[in-house]
Image (cartoon, rainbow, N blue to C red; front, side):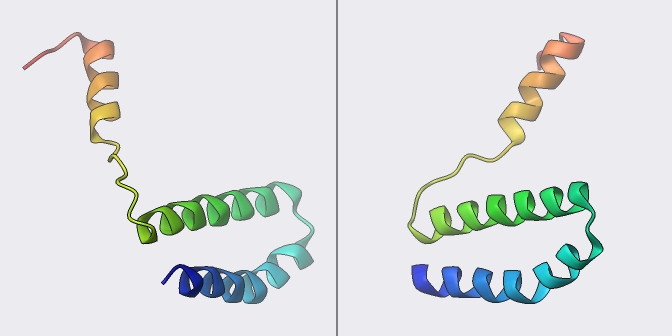
Length: 71
């Protein structure tokens, strides 16, 4: 399964990166590759069975710190 994730991302990068790189927009290229790398890392970790924490606790802590509300 791990190899399937890697091959899938290589195929996606091969087909999509050409159009991004042809535009020569540096900001868009950096944004695209940072999202691809982030999603690839998360997919690999999920494939390997690593438990990942959702963002709900972080969002809850931010809201509590901003508004001082505790339920």
